[in-house]
Amino acid sequence: MKTNESIIEGRNACIEAIRAGKTIEKIYVLNGCEDGPIRTILREAAKKKIIVERVDKETLDRLAQTGHHQGVVLRCAAYEYSSLEDILAKAEAAGEPPFIIILDDIEDPHNLGAIIRTANLAGAHGVIIHNRRAVGLTDTVVKTSAGAVNYTPVAKVTNIAKTIEELKKQGMWFVCADMDGSRMYDLNLTGPMGLVIGNEGNGVSRLVKEKCDFVASIPMKGDIDSLNASVACGVLAYEIVRQRAFSK
Picture 1: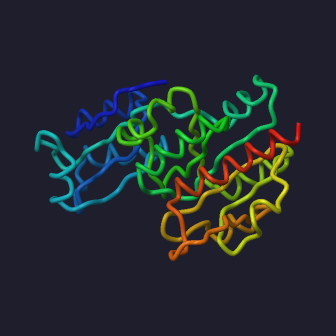
Picture 2: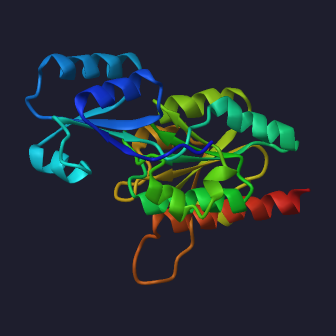
């Protein structure tokens, strides 16, 4: 469901936004600011598990739109998030084995938007992202997705590895992208499948990789050794699509 992505600044406005239940991506608070209203904001944020980041004045001035931030700026999401249950329900309603794309700390909003777009076109039932160490549904993500966020649910979770464990108990299998893995063509990627794509710089984290059933590499013949995260996601997603089509 669409909301209005917005920057809210000022202590009272931020307190009211939190209490009103807006979908908040992050709260930015000026370093060293600890007066009563700020403590109230921090307390309300803790109740709702909203991420708070301490920043310097230059950063806060850059984030603010009017310059009257009073030491605090709040960024709302452009779209409402779905739940993991929503994603599984979408697969069930379609009568299809779940196909979910899980992102292990993607930080670039253009990558996230492109991946959501690919997820939609490849028939994935949803995308899962980390609730802290990753970009959220910003306006840039929404624009880059070319409207796919209207159709492909995106869920936030606190622990990627634990989420994979929970989904494996429900019969899902997981493949992650890593250039040291087996050729994607040699793996059986049919059935209920989760595709894990790692961080732009560090790839899939060790713990998350250990939870995966398969590690897939994409054959490459060029002079550089890696693909952009969103491109790698597209290549592997369509290998899953291909295998599903030929397994029917």
